[in-house]
Each structure stands twice: as C-alpha cells, then as structure tokens.
Length: 120
Image 1 (cartoon, helix red, strand yellow):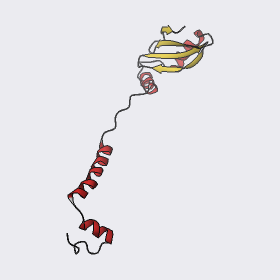
Image 2 (image 1 turned 90 degrees about the vertical axis):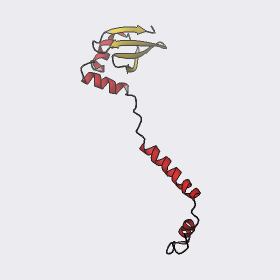
Image 3 (image 1 turned 120 degrees about the horizontal axis):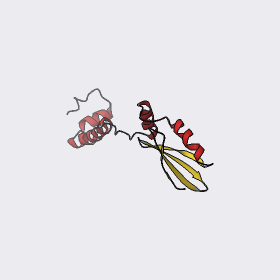
Image 4 (image 1 turned 135 degrees about the horizontal axis):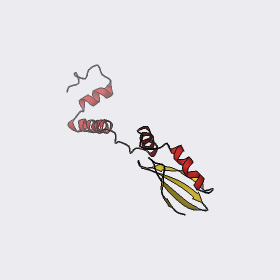
C-alpha cells in the first residue's frame, strides 16, 4: 500500500497500514479467533444440586417433602445434632453428630422408612 492510500489517517494508522504483513495479521487474528471460540462453546451442564433433585422428586410425587422426613426421624435421634441432608434421587441421607461421632440415617424418599443407620 502506498502512502497515498492511507492519506487522511493519523500517523499511527498510516504506519500500521504501511507496515502490515501476514505476520501482523496472524498476531491480530489468532487472539480474536481464540476469544470467539471461548465464548461460542456451549456451556458445560452443571450436575444437578441435591436440592434441585429433591424439589423435582417431590413435585413429581416420587418423594416425600424433606421436612416431613426430618419430622419422622428426629424423635429417634436422642439429642444428636442434626447437620443436614443429602439426596441422591431415591434416598435422603440425614447427617447427625453425637459425642464427636457422625451418624448417617438413610431414609427411603418415597416412603419415609429408615433403611439404614451407620456410625452409632
């Protein structure tokens, strides 16, 4: 390109236009392509959270609501501290602590029946 082709532009633009080579094109294009690729890839689906699975199971009638299950189990835990639930889609696993020991109580989500206790 000649100086006349860049006429009317500021000195830095004229210098860039006059010094343009395939090498400078690649230094500009490659980072742009990388940015486009990074933002155009589909988002990786996150693993559903326990609370989302529990909500869907309760909504679909496959599970009792967690508060109802907790009310059934708590009276049998003899003062153990309740630390919270986990849910795998079919079973609630309630975590308790008593005297420095962790106690797991697995409960069938559909029936509310205790299936297993461990850690006592």
